[in-house]
Length: 200
Image 1 (cartoon, rainbow, N blue to C red):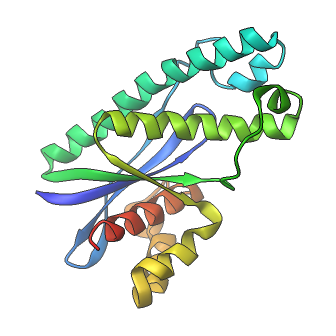
Image 2 (cartoon, rainbow, N blue to C red):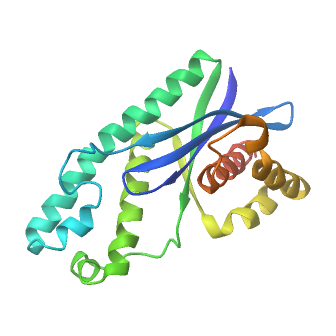
């Protein structure tokens, strides 16, 4: 089986997933899709911290904990679906790269709920964590790459081929068609980096 790596860039309740493989030294996109990690009909799950800010602290903690459990199930199902499709096409997925934000530690829940910017930060981390936990349960090694560090990390791991890889990923939409947004580009580069890291 050929080896593939997946990269994911998350939003509130959904993310862009791209799987890449090394095809004779060339980057090849072997899967891309939107993954949903919430039930869209569920109250307060798309923005769990926004919903929790109107609750007492104890109730807020319980709501966020329940949302975390509820998000891991569809995240696991989405990742498992990708793994199975790739396996059917003779690809084995061993690693996942999650595109991160700043990576700074979050304060206490009470401090988060008192700050609208921190609520947004926490929700971003919440949905990245759902995918991270889902991958771990599926026995996939997970790494995080901060988005602002992607090109620097690419140069560190890929060396002289980094510039060509970044350029190819940027222009891939022309050959594989839409959608090929910045989400997909970041996810693809993160996956390509992690694929090479695991070879060393």
